[in-house]
Length: 70
Image (cartoon, rainbow, N blue to C red; front, side):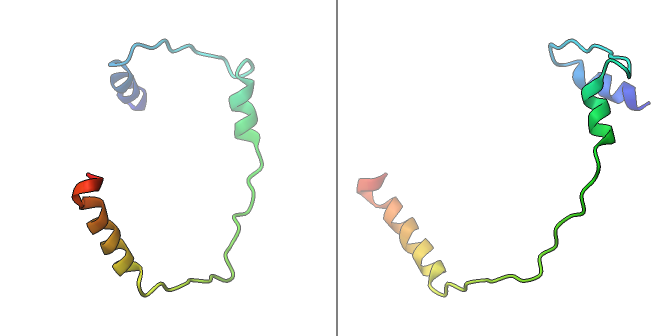
């Protein structure tokens, strides 16, 4: 069932799909055997609050719409 959906999806493209037996497909085999690393976790986060950021954005938008910049 899943393969049929993939065939339908790929039928609109000009491509050639080749089957590689497991022993010949060393790249996929190496990736499937790759050890998974533990994800890193964030222990602290610094956020800088720019109170005038919205004003700077508005000014930049107005400036970009001026006659000389369009």
